[in-house]
Image 1 (tube, helix red, strand yellow):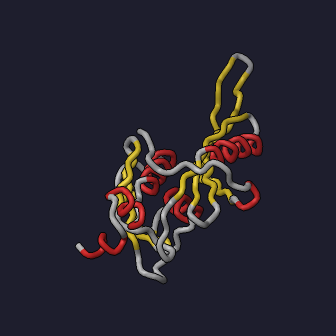
Image 2 (spheres, rainbow, N blue to C red):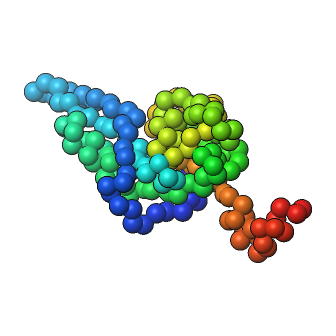
Length: 172
């Protein structure tokens, strides 16, 4: 499923924060015993409208988290924010993961569960209502949330696409 969000090219790595969403231990059974490896799902963001997710796999926990952070920095998108919330209601879907996010008034906070909360907080959304309606798998929820945020459009973008001014957009 292609994401329509604007990709971010250069972002200073020092201003990005990361949050571990999920860490999974995987065992491979061989003749010599079990070999353990780890996979990590990480969300990075600057808290000002840029967010991305990444997956890392390695034999060591720190190494797999570092790989996930590097992957997440390559997949950043820009999210339009209006006074700490999103511009409009949006559905997001990835696989069996379906989510709904709605703008909320000031002082509401981030009302969302687990993986969706991590993505919204890293994006810098302070007031939002979120509901996961499909799969609770963190990978699908994170990707569905990123999909919903990538599909958000603000009034300036809609006016530019239609070829009219902002004033004319709000008249009709």
